[in-house]
Structures are given as C-alpha cells and as structure tokens.
Image (cartoon, rainbow, N blue to C red; front, side, top):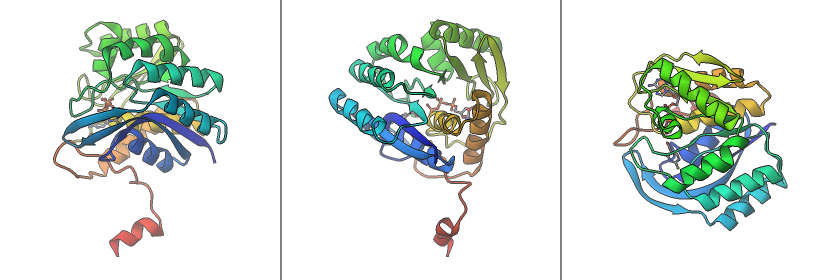
Length: 269
Ligand SMILES: Nc1ncnc2c1ncn2[C@@H]1O[C@H](COP(=O)(O)OP(=O)(O)OP(=O)(O)O)[C@@H](O)[C@H]1O
Ligand SMILES: Cc1ncc(CO)c(N)n1
C-alpha cells in the first residue's frame, strides 16, 4: 500500500485540516499518517481558539514518521508560525521527502486567519522551493504576488509568477471568485485549465485541504501531476455532490461518498 503524510492543523469539527486529509487519503486508497502543527477549536461557523504545537515536538513527530513508514507523498497545510516552518523545511530536506504538495493555508472558509504575517514570509523563503506543487486559492495567490486577480488572464499571470519565483508547479484555484470551478495548473512554462462544474452546495468547509490531499494521494500512487490533479478534481466534485448537510455554518463534505461496503451499509439497517 502506498503511504501519505499530512503535516497540518487539527480541525475539531472534522471537515478540514488533518481530519479532512486523513479521510481523503483513505478514500483515495493510500495509508494516511499525520504530524500535527496545531490544534484548533473550530466548527462550521468559525475558529474560537488555536494552540500551536511546540516546534521541537513537531520535529519529533516528523522523525517518528520518516524513520519508520516512509511517506510516498507529503501534504502540508496550516502552519501558522515561523519556527514550525523552519522545522518542517529542515526535516523534509533531511529525509529527502518527495511528492510534496503545499497548500498555503491563510484564511479558513469561515473567515478566521490561520497564519501570522511573518510566517507567510517564512513559507515563501523556506518551504515553497521544496514543493512539487503549490495550491493557492485566489486570495492566497494575491498575497503571494502582491497583485489583484480578477479574471482568468490574471490567474495565468499570477500562477506563472509564483511558479517562476519558487521553481515549482502552481495550481491556482479559481473556485468561488473568478469562474465556475476551474483551476489553472502552471508547470514547466506551460499552463492547463482543469474544468470543474460548479456544484450548488453551500457546504464547502475544507475543500482546499481535501483537494491538496487528494493530489498528494494520487502522486503517492505514482500518477503524474496532471493526472493527479484531474483525479483530485473528480474526487472533490463527488464529495461535494453527495450533498452532506451538517452544522450551522458552511458544513463539511462527505469524504466517504465512494466507499461502499458492508461496514458503511450497516448504518442503514
Ligand atoms: N461549489 C463548488 N463546486 C465544484 N467545485 C468546487 C466548488 N467550490 C470549490 N470547488 C473546488 O474545490 C477545490 C478547492 O478550492 P477552493 O477554492 O474552495 O479552495 P480553498 O479556498 O483553498 O478552500 P478552503 O476554504 O478549504 O481554504 C478546487 O478544485 C475548486 O475548484
Ligand atoms: C486546521 C485547518 N486547516 C485548514 C483550514 C482551511 O480550510 C481550516 N479551516 N482548518
């Protein structure tokens, strides 16, 4: 079985962060492991508290994983402080990690800020150049380029700029702001659009986490980047189409929509 590691924050309501990542990896057929960067007290309406992991402890989590079950891919999500980013970058280098997907998480769907300003600089300086692919949404791409992005042409320019600056592929997610649900992959000086039909579902808590974990899972299985993005888009469209409706705010998706066996069926008896 192929293996994947998520380095991210815990979401107590289970729709984003570590919990979304593990569900996604399992649903995509890989063995999931985690190194937790922070605990969040969070639900579908907002984040009430964040407790960051101690950086030495995060290093120990990463040592424990890499020295035993080596991950075939690594996904990095919420990391809100610079000292945690230093440790992650140094461990990824030390263990020669491969298939690295970095989701530069800045703000939750509910609007809560999940990263400090100086940590954004550290992400840029230390982590981005280690990534195989970065997956910013439009507001994140605007912060990373210092430009306003209001149409498809500007998405291409921004993805190109980020890709050339950090020497990695960039998947800029059109999502809610610019177009249907079309994402732009810029890699090796060329771009390709991945078209997604907008699903009329207000429950989009954790979509970014889910997409990046699905990409990492497919890279772990040996698919190339374009195929991995395509399969990940397909998976997230399925999870949104299942129309799960939980919580008082923007709720989570049904990550297990395609899992169909005697254990899932028993719930209906
Ligand atoms: N209503 C929708 N229908 C279909 N696809 C969607 C919808 N909303 C988002 N997506 C897709 O989900 C993926 C994640 O994109 P999104 O822009 O939501 O990420 P994000 O803003 O980083 O998420 P998060 O709010 O979790 O940080 C993208 O492939 C996007 O196109
Ligand atoms: C822990 C965590 N990571 C990422 C996001 C972004 O959706 C979130 N809401 N919570």
